[in-house]
Structures are given as C-alpha cells and as structure tokens.
Amino acid sequence: MQHSLIGAIAVSLFASLAYAHSGVTNPAVQARMDLMVGVKDATAVIGKMAKQALPFDASAAETARLALIDHATQIPALFEANERDPLDEARDEIWQDWDGFVQKTETMRIAAGSMDTSSLDTLRAGLAPLGASCSGCHEAYRIDK
Image (cartoon, rainbow, N blue to C red; front, side, top):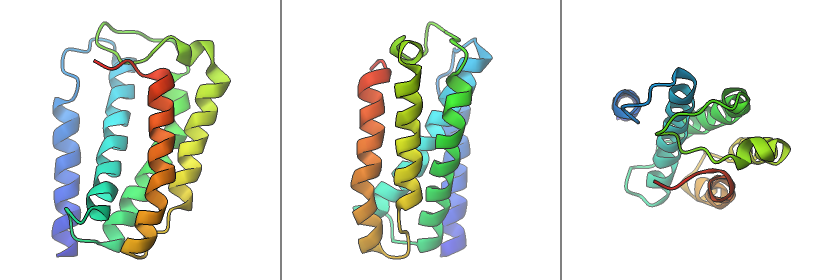
C-alpha cells in the first residue's frame, strides 16, 4: 500500500508538471511555475491526509514535508531575477519588497520543517501554520488568474 501511494503521488506530480501553465514562453518563469506546482502537489498530499481523503501514510507525509522544505529553499533563487511572461502570476511587489518576499518563503520553510508527520493528529496540528504561510505569500505576491 505504501509503495503504491508514493508511486501515485509521483505520477500525479509529474503529470501535473507536464501540463501546468502551458503557453509560458519564458523558461525562468516556467521554472518558477513548475516549482510552485510542486508546492501545491506536496501540500495537497498533506491536506488530503489531514481531511482523510487519502489514508494517512507517515512515509508519504514525510516525503511531502521534505519536498516543501526543499521547494521553500529554492523559491528565492528562482524569483531573484525579475523575469516576466504574459502568463505569469507574480506581482511586481515581489521585487519591490524583496526582503518581505524572502521572509515569507522562510516562514514557509520553518512551518514545513516544524511539521510532525508521525501521526494524523500531529500532521493536522502542523497544517494551519503551513497554510497560513502559503496564503500570506499568495495574498501579497500572487496575481489570481
């Protein structure tokens, strides 16, 4: 069961990356968008387990948590250059408030790093800080399309 769940997660992640944001012509923007899809997919695994839409699997939850930490660490480097594309969802405020943006990515990294994925109860307890870090960044720095 555990291997099939992890396999399903991996297939889902790669499939969503393949179709995400088609039409983007700027490779730097595409790389940012692909990374953010990875954040969304890892968060979805944890969220679905917390809601019991997926069976709790400590190993899969830990894999998702580690992916979130890794992604949060990569975000600043991918956004550092003010690269644009007509389909990108980044607000100019990212570069106008660079220190604030970087701090929000650090907040996400800390929230993911603090999550305890050993049980459903501890996973649920860590979900609120993670969600708050995501929404705080999106409200300030993402264009809703």
